[in-house]
Image (cartoon, rainbow, N blue to C red; front, side):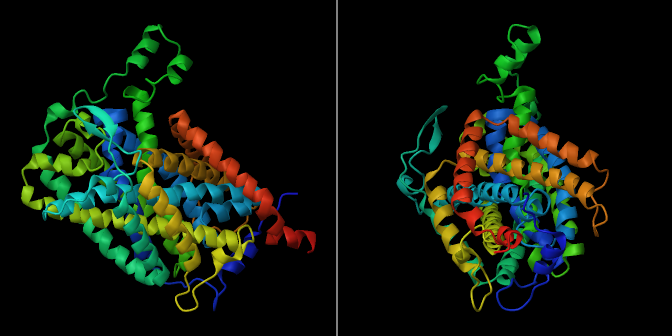
Length: 502
């Protein structure tokens, strides 16, 4: 039997009020700011350089466009669900209503990769910019406390171990923001709004000032040659042989696709908006505005930003550089703005970590309310009405990953988890349009089934372009989740007990 939660049941949960429920305190502007807060961060300020150096070269601009197209299709599907089912939990909740409990658990477990490891990825990069900022005041943070034991850095063109023990600043920022989230969603949103204004301002300043210093030679070749692709074209190597080789994804068309999968991490903020649906004042109107509005604004900024960045400095200089924006901006000569630039980047990173931690706690809150996780994850603070115990648990979990795991490995894990979640949301729209066509949909995804199908295809294409190691980590993570489901969640599911009359 397929155990699903009905739409009326979900709406009843969304309309609950009083003690033990989340507080509706977010306006449409707050929701757009949450989306922009999560979107503009490590993906733009750090992963852009990684994708340019390792995968796409100057054509990272096209990688952003490919990723944006996939996000656009998925975003339209998210907007339909978020306006129709304004409940905390995002893709987890939507899957529960369309594909049943087991798939809901899978997607909820998968979202840990997206939000928790997303926060860890950004925190690891935040640490590098923080170190550069305090160096401007003559304070030098020891390398052993600035890098994890497996971090590598570029020394004379060779990637060598950084000689670190723990990324301490990354752990500190995760702990501080987790404590802020325990204080309250309204307070966290107010802080986020300020941080978003600061970082959007610096993105615009970077584009405006950097444009005059673009060196056209840095954009040539726009798509660096991939020797494996050339061999396929000449017939000396088969496609599947090339696909399984190390050449795949390193420049050329395959590099653009893999670069899209890497920078895709930069777009995950819009779906974090949907996790806050139960805290929106007018979710039927605000959720589509928050999701689509933040995606459109950030896509435009991303394309312009990556064009300027790869024009200021040759893409090869960004290899192993966790702070490529500062490296590129140094070419402008505006050295007096360096501290301002780094402060704004730190503000941007901070807001991303904040929204990711918020999103993860809300997903686990919903899963706990359904009995799939222990009750401790849905316990709310008696005064602040926040899932403070979940925040505490993820403070520890995210801190460990931020302190010890290399940022590039984290980025790939986040991307594949997010793409999987987006694919399931697109599938969910197709299913619900077939099974419940008469449901009230304040926002309707246009051109169904074309848009959801294209969303699935683009997401799967980007997943396929990621390294096999990312697929292996995803398989291990999912296997662990399935074990937990059968050992605990299936036995304690509230909806299952209702169906069985217990």
